[in-house]
Image (tube, rainbow, N blue to C red):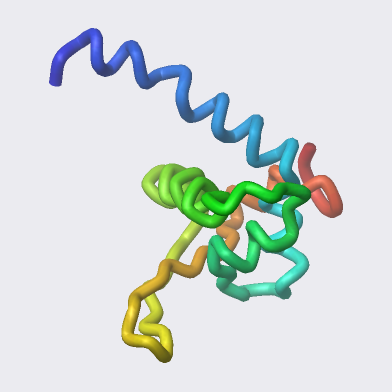
Length: 103
């Protein structure tokens, strides 16, 4: 890997994490219940935005967190045959809940 590439990406995770906390993404997921998995479209529907791409943007954020084991995910086949990711909280992600332990 190119060293400049590694340096340019070191700031991404903290910025995305800060945005997720400000948007209450972890709390929205926690409201689904203990051990529940939530789709990005379900989460996006709870955000105060009219951006038609919100679900896709939320999915990108959550994929980053799952790649660092901050969230878990599962793939589910929907009725129309498409596959969607569903995300769940891990013990580490609970530290970022405003309603329980953490922030």
